[in-house]
Length: 235
Image (cartoon, rainbow, N blue to C red):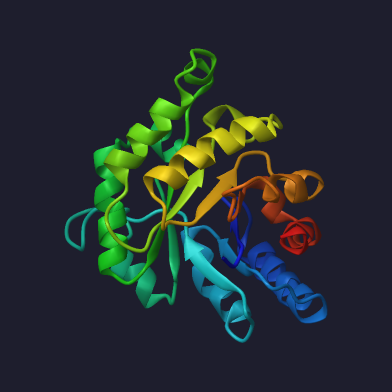
C-alpha cells in the first residue's frame, strides 16, 4: 500500500505564508521526489491559493472539516460539495479538536463522512482516546467504539490520534500504537490506517515501521516545509 502523508495546517498562517509554504513543497517535490502520496490541508480561506500552487505537481490538497449538510441556512459552514468544487480530494473529519471544541459526536462525524463520500471526497476520520481513558486501560475499547459508530461504508481513511499526544510532544510507545492499529486493522481490514500525534521528522521513520501504520497525519511539523518533506522522505 502506498504510504500517505497528510499535513494539517490547522488555524495557522496568512495568505502569503500559505502561498510560500505550498511553493516550497512543490520545489521539494521536484528536487527530492518521493514515492508516497502527500496531502496538505490548509485553512478554508487559503484553499484557492494553495491549489493554484500545487496544481501542476503531484501534491494533493484537502480541507480540515466539512458540514454534515449539503446546503442551506448553515451560516459559517462549508459543504463537502463546495470542497469538491475547489478540487479537494480529501477532508479531515472528527479531529479531537473538533470533538472537544465543537462538541461533535460520533453521529455528527458519521454524517460528515457520508456527505464527503457522496461528494466524491475521501474522508480522513480521526479516532483516539484521552489520557484518562488510556490510563484506565480503555484505549482499545474507546477507539473501536468510535470506529463502529463514526465510520461509514465506503472509501475512507482512519487516523488514530491519541488525544493526549496531540501537540504535547508525547508519543505513545511503538507497542501502544501497534496495539491500536492491529485492533483497527482487524475491525476495518480494507481501510488505510494513519497515525497522528506529535509526529516529527525525528520519529517518523520509527513510527512508519510499526505494523499496520500506512501513513501519518502531521500537525505542527507540517508548517515547516523542510521538516514536512523529511517526514515524506521517511515514508
